[in-house]
Image 1: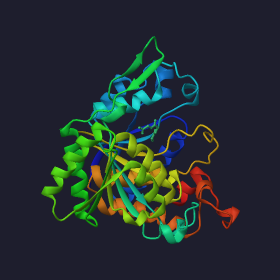
Image 2: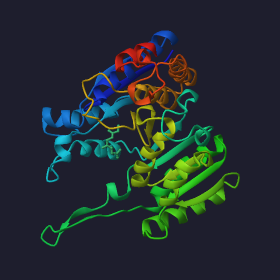
Image 3: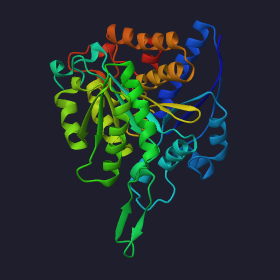
Image 4: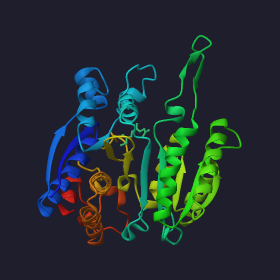
Length: 353
Ligand code: GGG
């Protein structure tokens, strides 16, 4: 029997709705497998700014550090997107959480459930067999380098920076994972243009010498963007920088059918954080339309990676699979052939799972 303390951090928008379903699934697992999961909640993002003025209050960070794992939702609010001069933004909470918890590796599995072949506009024959694990570096790059304005505010800059150490530690995680899979690693950079990418490639090349059993391919990010939708089965493990990983995994979500299907695990020095890759989606917030499967699959990653509960994790993935096999869909993964009575809202599909 495992005794674990899980912090629920719903954040903004649909984060609240989908995280509630993820927690219910964890409750069900605890009951079925005789574990004891205790919970607490914390604020982040816009809701934290509204309550305290701070996108990541010290109390939230403290609770994160003292938990066995965090199930997180999303941050963001359109009011900041339309106000570029806003000094305090929800996303600052997310970046600070990653930095403070040392979450340098963001694992984003691109898992295509068989039933969702045809859910996106990519042809099924191109998608069949696609199974990719992205490692997005999460605490460096242009997100964390110096940023500012000069020339009386008429010029803005964001510096992309990587140290050898930062590349090595994410690279090693990706090589180790490739060893447990199909032993193929694609390292994505822009080394024909960017100095930070040249250092990235140097370090991955050095690591490759330690992993002679792993076949390594180096791609420029623009080529990867094309190959992902042209030949997704070419990829096994992909390792890349923060910004490239952010963009490429949104693109890769179309391989899985929808952003609503993609879970992620952020791991590093301390407490692991598990979250859907999607944002707060205020256009559908409060309507009960959000697909909670990314949150449920994030809970599966939490059980496996932070708690070592493999069977429980597989039970969750299998539950999602069975619900899809029965024909249930949320709106984002339905198509013209879906029987409208099988299209369920957030809570209803959560109950089925
Ligand atoms: N659950 C993911 C989320 O909240 N995304 C919103 C966001 O601001 N993402 C930026 C990033 O992941 O770097």
